[in-house]
Image (cartoon, rainbow, N blue to C red; front, side, top):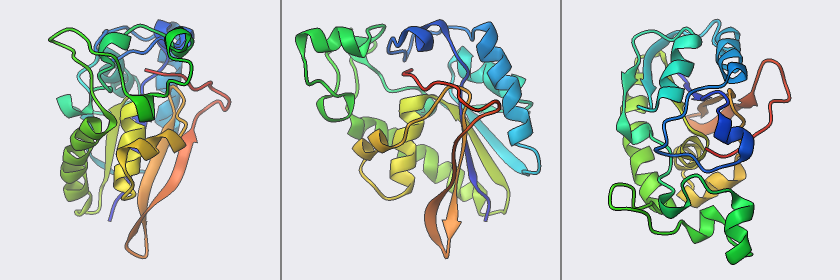
Length: 205
């Protein structure tokens, strides 16, 4: 059986400032493009039979620069809908809600087009992605998922059989590659938050 290869998109202006980024379609920075190109060596030796990508430009451009061919866009791979917290940093939110935590407290209501999501709602999307990806892995090839920090953290939790909120345990940096596989038939993390070069800072979005 193959592995799930999780790729977080490269740096954007808002990952630098720490602003929550879901539907705001920001491009990669110059450094973000370099991070995306640095993903390619981490994929060497993997037989990737299927690539699924978020519809966001930052994710699609990352897939392209990483050398992934014929990616299929899946809206379910979109980042957590932050609702009223789109573009807002955690310190800004905590001025009014000092103990606020995305994973346990959720987001403020947003406009009709982007009302916000709970961790459980993101988990439902992750479960649908996993159903498609795991079915494809059964043929022996790897499946690459190119998406976003919080979404991929939720997906990892669900793959391991944990509640969506357990994604809080998995820090994930921009341009990072992680792998999920099995040991003795049970789901495991086989590599996590790997980058070239090392030391890329993690941030939201």
